[in-house]
Length: 147
Image (cartoon, rainbow, N blue to C red; front, side, top):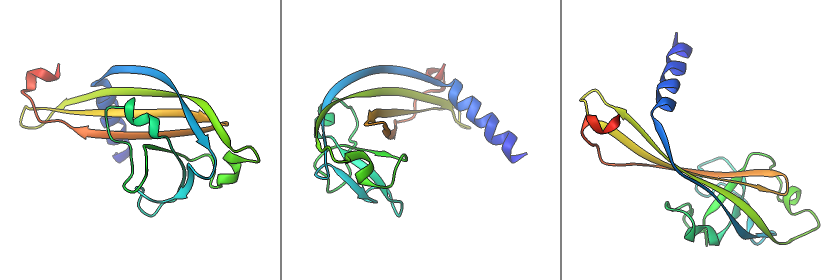
C-alpha cells in the first residue's frame, strides 16, 4: 500500500510541473586536484567527488556554491576517487553544462497554490556524470494560480 501511495504521489507531482528554461552553456573547467575535491562539505556525512566551477555563478539563478568554496559545485556518483577523473592529464577543458529551471506546483489542503522552483545542472566530465539540484519554495498563491 505504501508503494502505491508513493507512486501515486510521484505521478501527481510530475504532472504539475513546467520547464521554464532549458539551455546549454559551455564553460572552462579546471580538471585537476585544484578544482576537484573528495569532500562531504555541503552534503552532511556522505562524501562525493565534486568539481568547483566558478563561471557557473554567472549562468545560474540559484546559489549552487557550498559554504567555504570559491564557486558553484557539482558532484558525481560515478567514482569515489579524484584520480579516476583527473587521470594523468590535469588541465582546463571546455565542458557543456545543461541548466534546467522547472516550476513545480500543487494545491494544498487549504486550497492555496504551493510553488517551488528547481534548478538542475548536468555535465559530463571525462565520462562521469556530474550534477547539482537546488529547490526553493516560493510564497503561496491563490489556488487558481496552480492550473
